[in-house]
Length: 151
Image 1 (cartoon, rainbow, N blue to C red):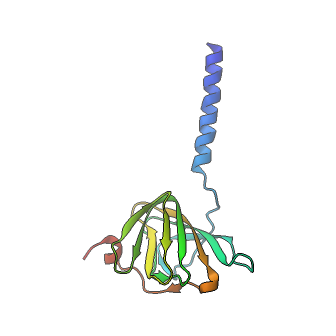
Image 2: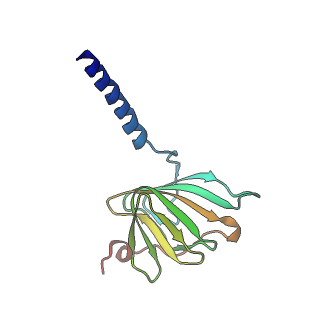
Image 3: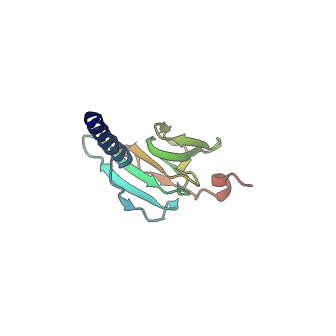
């Protein structure tokens, strides 16, 4: 009986450590981004700045519920890898869609779009873009009608 209790205690400790490891973020939250090109709270951490060898930048963005970026264009495109939560992604002229942890979103070069969290759930993603093709072109804010779907 003592051996069984010892084994259960060890397994319980392992499960607690495993759960804690799964709940902790891989990257730090970063710095809160000033609300210039988005609505709500967004934190950014630059993981890799473009340089002479790798011409693309890679960042982590963490958005609180209700946060969303303005409409924008990436001249060289962008790839989003959703690592936590739920969010929205919409290209101009298409329906808004829900994106979830584990999805990879390809924002095609020159296509106007926006992305952000849902009203109730935050979203975290890794974003990478080739900077040699040009910086992000920021456009108008996403309206409440576009975000919430109200008319």
